[in-house]
Image 1 (cartoon, one colour):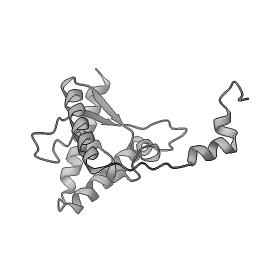
Image 2 (spheres, rainbow, N blue to C red):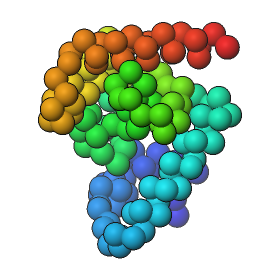
Image 3 (cartoon, rainbow, N blue to C red):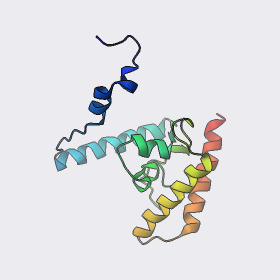
Length: 150
């Protein structure tokens, strides 16, 4: 019988090991396209409704579906300034920190990590402008102030 307090998740070795197990599911290529189209439509709706997305890069990388900061979807949510793309929904986003006790980071560190990730990603695409990445992050910072005081 399990204890009434869910402490077994933190202290039960079998439970911890089951939580660390990976499960793989084969996804057909056509399904990826369907999911991408649904996500694009959702981003459009989110942007139209003025909903904001808080991005916590360190937390997102540690517990999310991607393993590197360059895979973070912030530029998919909003790439204004980085790209001349009129089809991008330009969702309002901000860069934040998550629980300091769990994710030992600072806001400055989160911005630095995203700067490096975005610059490296763009450099790989042949777009080497550090100034453009700084301008983008300033835009995101200003948007974060706007979002937080509404």
